[in-house]
Length: 151
Image (cartoon, helix red, strand yellow):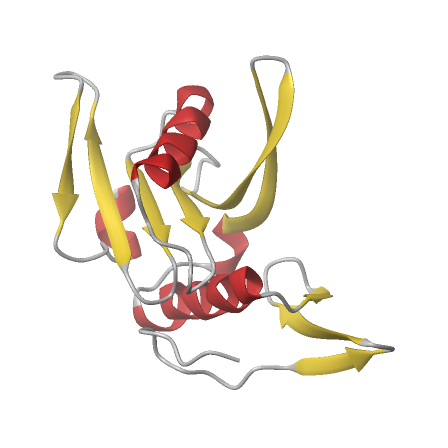
């Protein structure tokens, strides 16, 4: 597929008829291999292998209800008490990360109220730390490791 601005890992890709699939370590099954899924799988492996995020405390395609509409967060990271701490939104590598992408993840956060919001298209990655007391946020220069996230 695409060479991303993320560490490579040994992917498990399978052919299922005329469609290609990739193994998702969080859902423990093969899922359709789309450009966005390619980014998700690389990002999840980056978090687990390089940032110490436990697989058992992450979930893909997390359902939530926003204004009586069902939505799905691409990935949610939890602490040991199963409190949501980070939402991650993925886009395909050719999708520009703009205000609309941040608006989407901001809306999800109206429900979950996490500490960190992350957006990635596999080439660019943005991480914001929320400050609810002052109703602001700040961009971080790098993604926190898991110990910092739950600190």
